[in-house]
Length: 207
Image (tube, rainbow, N blue to C red; front, side):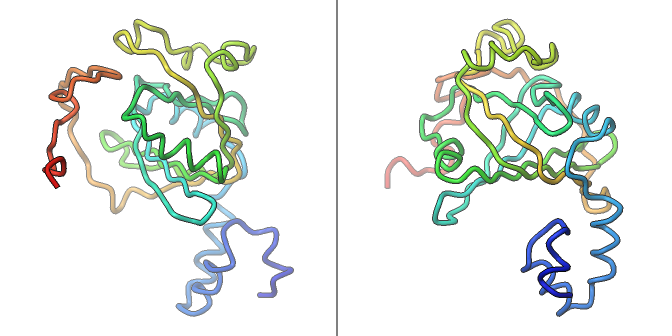
């Protein structure tokens, strides 16, 4: 394929170079054509509405990467439109690795996985922006399912939000995802209690 013919396809030049090298070009082309959207369809939006966990990948302006996790009640990640979603940033360790990266480089990769029922995942790639809570409160289109209140998070409210403009959305197939069983676990959202946060689990404080 020429560079010109690749421009309308999802993914990177590196993907296609390796597809050519390892003989997976036709298989990848079918995936691009049949599975990759530039928006969230209704099924994807319904999937988002019941998720309680999301993996977030960002990189700074030099390409140094960070992967983190965000959790909340079902629907804490919500679609404003078929091309825009929003998720909250709760009080954390103060490092702000993800938000710091976004401030330098807006590209973001999200992965939401249903470990408990379908063992299906949803990839969403796009461009992110950090919003203050006051900005979000003024959004007329904010759905009720992502209007996180003081009560829904046990007393913790979002410090700010991340808005993502969707560029790619596609399935992560079920065949390599384990089927897990949810357990009852009391979550203390946004706590500063070191014991509840896990303490010095990896023994790094004495280095």
